[in-house]
Amino acid sequence: MHHKLRARELTRTFGETHALGPVDLQLTPGEFVCVVGPSGCGKSTLLRIAAGLTRPSTGTLEISTSSPRPAAMIFQDYGIYDWKTVLANVRFGLDIQKVPRREANTRARDWLARMGLADFADAYPSALSGGMRQRVAIARALAVEPEILLMDEPFAALDAQLRTILQDELLALTQTTRTTTLFITHSLEEAIVLGDRVLVMSARPGRVIAERRPPFARPRTGDIRSTPEFTALKGELWDLLRGEVHQEQHTAAVPA
Ligand SMILES: Nc1ncnc2c1ncn2[C@@H]1O[C@H](COP(=O)(O)OP(=O)(O)OP(=O)(O)O)[C@@H](O)[C@H]1O
Ligand SMILES: [Mg+2]
Image (spheres, helix red, strand yellow):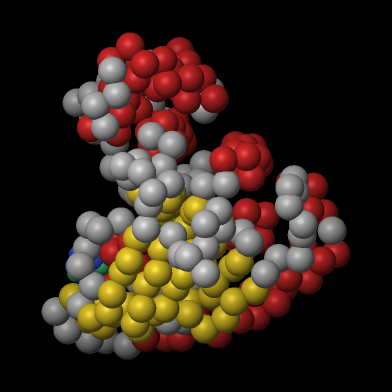
C-alpha cells in the first residue's frame, strides 16, 4: 500500500524530557486518523514532526504528495498573524503558492464565507473572538486545498454548538475531497465522529497503545452521535485513556 504519510520509530526528546515515542504511524490516501491522549504526551510534537516544523530525535518520516500542494497545519494556538487582515491571513498559503492575487482573493473570501466570517475580511485578528480566530486558521489551512491536513485541536476553543457544526462541516468536506488528515483532539466524540481510525496515546513519552475503527460506513453524518455503537465506543476509548490520564496527573504531582 502506498502511504501519504509514514512515520517509523519516531522519538523526540527536549533536553531531559523524553516527549514522544517511539511511534509508528501510516496514513493511506484519503484516510482520516484521529489521535487522542493525555495532556503533555507529545501529540503536538508528533504533528509538528509530521509538518516538518520539528525534527525527530530518532526515526524517519516520509510524506508523499503528488503535486506541489503542501501539507497544511492548523496550530493548537492558531498561529495567525495579528498584523495581517483576516483576508490576508486566509490568503497567506495561496500567496506562498504564487496563486494570482485575484484568484487568491476569491478563494480566500469563499472560505471566509463558509466559516461565517464574510463580514470580517478586512478586520484584524485582534478584533475577533477566540472562536473566530480559530475559524480564520481553519479557513487558511483549507484554502490551499492541501493533500495532507494536519490539525492540532482545531475546535478546542469553540463553544459546543459551533464545535458540533464545524465537526459536521469538516466531516462533509473531507468525505468530498478525501483529504488525508491527521487530527489531534481531546474529545473522544470528535475523534469517533470524524475518524476512520482513532489512535490512543499513552502518557509521556507518548506511544500508540490502542487503535479503534469507528463502525460507521462512509459517507456518514453527525447523526451517528446518537447511536448505541457510538456510546459504546466512547466508553471503551475512555476506559483506555483513563489510566493514562491518571498516570499523567500522578507524574505531574511528583516534585521534580
Ligand atoms: N520546544 C519545546 N521545548 C521543550 N520542551 C518541549 C517543547 N515542545 C514540547 N515540549 C515538551 O514535550 C512534551 C510534549 O509536549 P506536546 O506539546 O507535544 O504535548 P501535547 O500532547 O500536545 O499536550 P497538550 O494535550 O497539552 O496540547 C511536554 O512535556 C512539553 O513540555
Ligand atoms: Mg498539544
